[in-house]
Image (cartoon, rainbow, N blue to C red; front, side, top):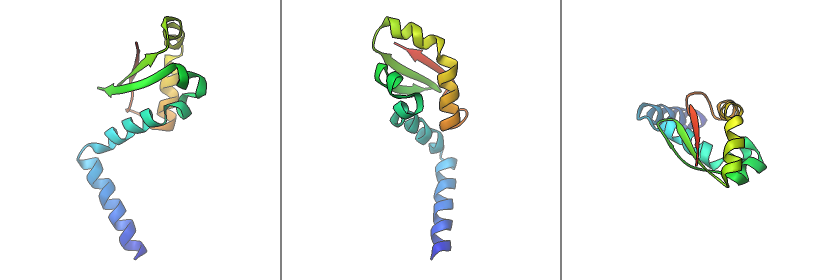
Length: 95
């Protein structure tokens, strides 16, 4: 029974990957786990809206924070890569 479950789980993972859903699932993980990826302060001031063409669009509380977060863009991208994986988000856009 345990082998059947493992085989089924493996088959589902392969199907999800083949259909191209794996990256979409990881994108949703970035959005869902945003605050735990970047920490509570940034999580409060920058809200993830969507990911299009590997660009994460973030609604920011105000222009001052937009400027500040621009300086931290590389660090945030590294945190996403470390936590979720490479090739999920290549850039951030603040608005």
